[in-house]
Length: 364
Image 1 (tube, rainbow, N blue to C red):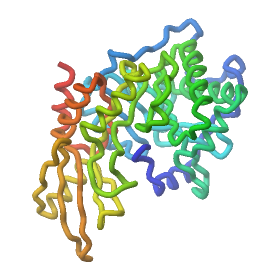
Image 2 (cartoon, one colour; image 1 turned 90 degrees about the vertical axis):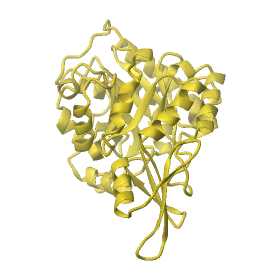
Image 3 (cartoon, rainbow, N blue to C red; image 1 turned 30 degrees about the vertical axis):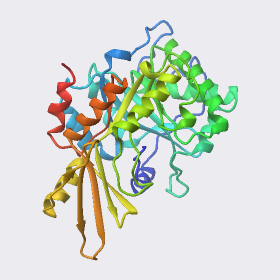
């Protein structure tokens, strides 16, 4: 995702049998679903204000993510299943690890908690050659005509209903500015279709001006990525700051979208080598590295990240920035002040147990 789908793991996943969704047909024509289809009169699942604490679980860290989920039953008001990817024919399918875990019914894993299927614009090939992460051309092909949108929407709904998800989440990143108007039309059409089928819809937004400068269709729930201020694309620094979050809230407020938007905050951090190459670390990995190196982290202000520095065996300088529960509490307080009221965690898996008591305080 986002900080996401590691290419090496994508190659491994691509080598598995990838059960692709058949070419687009109409919902009426497709009659061999394993699960009973919803009817057009089914009440739409609405998340909204009731969905105040959610989290993603990624296919490449499924065991750890599910372990944290099971250890904290009742904590989250929804869950995001990350993810469905695309083949070279532009057809989406559920990641094999998730397909094996969920079978025909997401409720077998998540019970009554609404589970959304997150679909990302990554193209994964059987050989691993030609994999494309966050492919803008894929999005252009999927949304640039009425016919393309209709076929794509049909496939998305069938994919969600196949495993009885409560809804869909669209995480299409790096959308070209010229394609954004068509993408907005796609969101509106997808919302109408999901509502008719009784499915919820969430749309992930990147914290960039071109995505937050014009109104989006009313109806869906939105999620803003409240991170990536610093990361693998930059030198050392925090994933988010209070100022950064306030700026995003102002942008959303200006287009009338703040009340409909959850804020995503990211756990973990990065280890930068010589201020350039960055290795992504989960919170537990970062804490373990700090302990092994016998480092004494400082606390960055005003964002609350733990910052550590060391020199490796090759004489290269390293700088680690990582988040813990105190960091997230600091950022969330700033986000609440800015106007956000709902939190989505990227992601479960590799977190310190101390994170979850803090999350539990958000329920009171």
